[in-house]
Length: 187
Image (cartoon, rainbow, N blue to C red; front, side, top):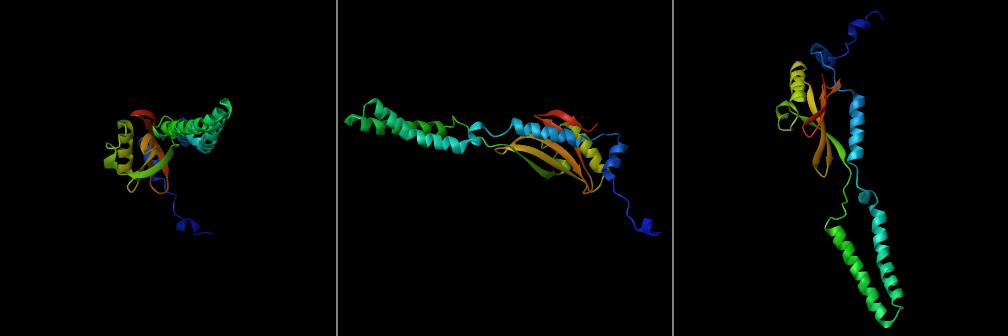
């Protein structure tokens, strides 16, 4: 139709235009995805957490088995029943001691969480200076954009963050870091 060009809205590319003007290349989505998967594997759940149902069943079943084994060793004499009950009790106390003191860590896996981050909080979140500079610069150039902080968390501890810039139409990764060490940064 002849009037379609007049009515069609041009595609918004504010973030990518700002990146071009500043001669920056964002961190690729492939690199971010690979990094996130590697960190999930590295900080995954412990063996005991993954198999806690089987371990619990094994420990519960083991208590009478230990009692029966002690009773069989004593030949099921009249003293054997007291020894059987006592050994089962000692076994249960040992299991409670091991699990209660944390000798067996039932550490759950980690998970990724994203949240908005005001530009004024970059320093408070320990964003490395090279990534923070790029974020401030791009957010000034793209009004209405917002920063999104992605964090790998386990037991409320932040293990591995990344920073995104989002303006509603476009989203780019500005950087990835761990313990203050920059892994990737928009350059």
